Amino acid sequence: QVDPEKAQLKEIRKFTTEETARIFRLPLSLLQEHANSTNRANIEEQGISLVRDTLTPWITRQEQELDRKIFLQKEISKVRTRHEMDIFLRGDAKARAQYYRELFQSGVLSINEIRKKEHLNPITNEKGDFHFVPLNHAPIEYLEKTTPSTPSE
Image (cartoon, rainbow, N blue to C red; front, side, top):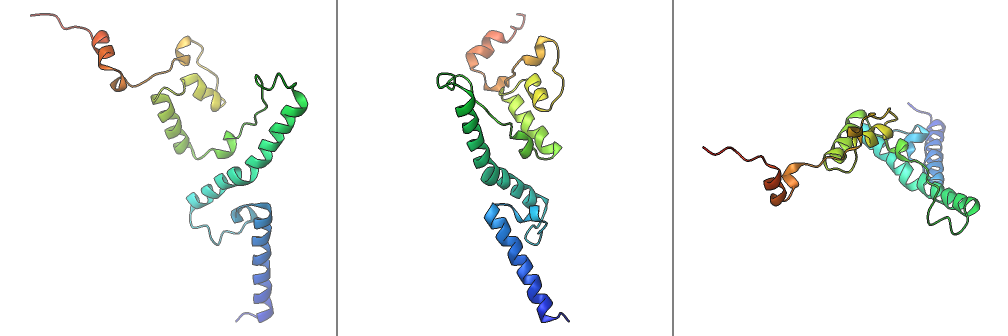
């Protein structure tokens, strides 16, 4: 049996934690309140929410202030300050591998661009900078030109 005063104190502490999270726009999981977090995906989604809803507005304001104070007005169209936020949004290794695979297979990123994002040394020959696309998305005319002809019988 729980003493009513202790039960009330527990409720007050829970309310204080929720209010703190609400004021600072933090997920409850960052304040070690895991009562509403049902699984790992839920906590990961809260981390993404933290970056999107809490950190991004502050970082955007900081980038704008740095641009204003560091660069001349004519330079801002050519150069900008940008914080690298990808590190906060990194998921598990399997999710990152799938993300990079899709970007590589659709020709968005080269091998060296992926290696750079993962802080790995580039492939030194020029083949590391090639962008590849699936041939099944090429126009038929291109396939006809590149397909070797079969010898006549």
